[in-house]
Length: 339
Image 1 (tube, one colour):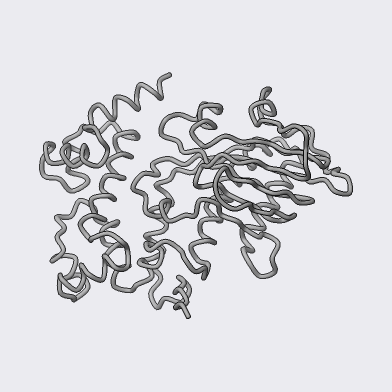
Image 2: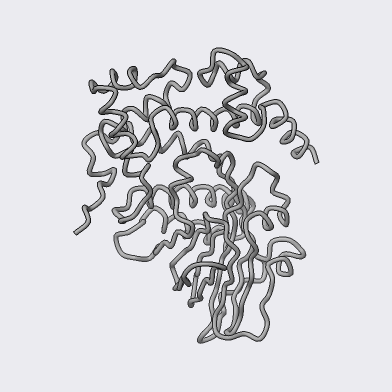
């Protein structure tokens, strides 16, 4: 019988874990918007392209990763990914497509498949919702989370391609259910500040969904999520996140947790899937990408901030992991955002 995973609530010292999750979550700069809220009479179907095509459709920009979510308010439907198993959704359930795969929403056997491009031809399709679906119809709310700096973000890389969430299950995801309810209530009331509140609740909806997944006792979650629950590895990762510019070595990390370097390296690799120094470098590259996009710091300053003594050493490492040096990488993104 497989060993049950340890959850955050079961760890003796959850403070380092919370700080790690919070740090990785903040770095995603979550924003979002609604695409569609409508009722459908069976049979019906809608096709959504992959995240890259959807990002172009929404003019999301090069540094934003578009993540689609679907919430069934009434009735039921099925999500058919281009690859993988079908996902059946009932009222009060939601799916978040972190993997970005093209997929089809379907109920019954329709003769025609509508494209999301056609439905959004005049902007977000949310004004015609009346809740009437007929005996066998469905009411659907769909939107997107816009995430930034997903590359080398260990939290994002630990999320499943499709996250299936049962909001209405008793005792489960209480906060998430409340956020979803607040969002739909604000849309129904059509208040002066309703659209602003809806946008903020979409951001909270994404964060709460990730939090609920991280805290769940599901089997088969990514190594990193299990690794941060290890009291030793969690403290090492928390120290890396707190002081990325520190002159780290495996010896120095081991000293922090009173363990030999060889034992720490073996335990870290087994728990996280990377060596301690590889994990450190990837996190530094995530931070560097953020600074290149979000600050006016020069390359030397950014290199120092992420732990490199020279711009040359920083540039070599950056090119190794990102495929180009920091200066052209930044210029490319600046030019894209100016379009």
